[in-house]
Each structure stands twice: as C-alpha cells, then as structure tokens.
Length: 305
View: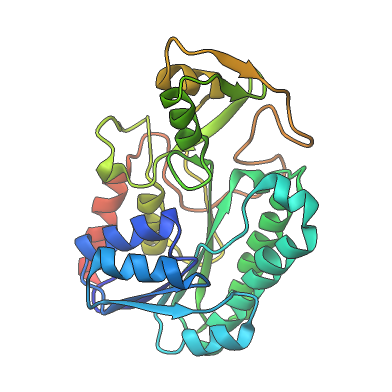
C-alpha cells in the first residue's frame, strides 16, 4: 500500500518518526516521505543521517491549519505523531497542551479532509483511557476528534483511525535512558512506588533481538498494521505486556540501589488499555498475533492493491 505513495509524518523528528521513516524506506518504496515538525536542527540532523532523496522536510506547527493545508497537498497518508507528552508539564501548562494535542489534532483532521488525503492515523496513549491527568484528557479528545472526522469526511473522504498503546521503551522521555544513565553513574535509581506497573512496547521489533510473539509489538509495526487494515473509525489497541517499573530497574541494574521518591500527583498505580463502556475497538492485533505476522499480512495485502 505504501508503494508510490506520499506519506507525511507530523512530529516526524521524534523517536517514533525516526523509526517509522527508517522502517518505511527500507521495507517499501514510497514516492516520498515528508517530515513535518518545528525543529529545524533536528530536521537537518535527520537529513544527514538518512541521506535519502525520497525524504523531504517541512517546517510547521500543527496549531496552524493553513500551514497544514499547504503541507498536505498531494499527500496520500498522514501519520499524526506530533504531541506534547510530559505529564507534569501538562499540569503546569494546560493551555499549551490543549492547543497542540486537541486543536492541533482537529487541524490535522480538517486539513486531511480538505486536501483529499486517503488515510489519516493518530498515535495515542493508554493514558487516554479513563484519564486523570490533563495530558491523558487531551489525548482522549484527540481520539474523539479523529473518530468523528471519519463521519465528517463522508463516503469519499479520508479514512481516520487511532492507535493506542503504552510506554515505548528507549524512546525520548522514556525512563529507560534515565535508568541506564543512573546505573552508569552508580547512583540510586529513582522509583515512585514498588508496585507501580506500566504497559511496554518497543519502537521497532525488527531491531529487538529478544522480542517474541507475546513479549513485544513494535510501535512501528502497529502503525503499519493499522494503516493497512483500517476501514475508518477504529481504535487499534494491542495486547501489551505489563510489568512493574521496579522489575525494569532491576533488569537494568540487578544489584543497584533503588530510591523510592513517592507517587506524583494524579499518577496512576496501574494503567489500562480499555475502559468499561468503550465500544469494541474494531480490527486489532490479538494476543496471539505477532508484529511479524501483522506485517506479513499487511505486505501481502499491499501487493494485491
């Protein structure tokens, strides 16, 4: 499905964007991939790192509808990854998170309809499930905007869908780099609570030597799966492993000291992927399906298009 297509990734200079661009350029033959983001330095570094003439860069902010309308002209597929994500920052700067995560997502959906984009996918988070933080609430609103946009687009409009998943190990802002740094410096690893757990996944399971069918589903492979299988209006929710954060710390530094610093305000002990009362999430990878199986099926479907 990606062959000969023009793909645009908002927030494409982030951890997911880099992994998605690498995977797509290596696995498919798109006409071009456009990275839309606000940071010209990261774009410059990414341009040098990839050195691929199918890759394009545009500066812009999802808060600007007019900028998105210009960027989306001639685009077939939009992956909306741009977001503000740090929970404490959202509590101190709620207006900024509202502007980027809610208004920005509405702008992406509206520009996709106006420009005749074929498919538009939002990257969301398990914190959007029964949210207790402003960040989670903004992502839930973004999900609602995308699902509703499938109706607004009409019979011949874009297909809209959402992916919702947990913490991505090793991504920018993940605790994994922090834990590794503290371990390397011989410092205690800070933890909020001994029993706190989180859902985990990797960025790209093709680069994970220890991934098995039930252990991990790559964020990139989930987006692949959703783009290939979306009919419009779905929320794709993978069945992810959940484990205690202290077990992650122990795996990184088995003999290291742990320092319990206390739970931050509005922080959940355990996240959930779905809340009671939510409708069935539509087509999605089951507990038994691996990222490789999903990718193989998507590739086969793409060749038949």
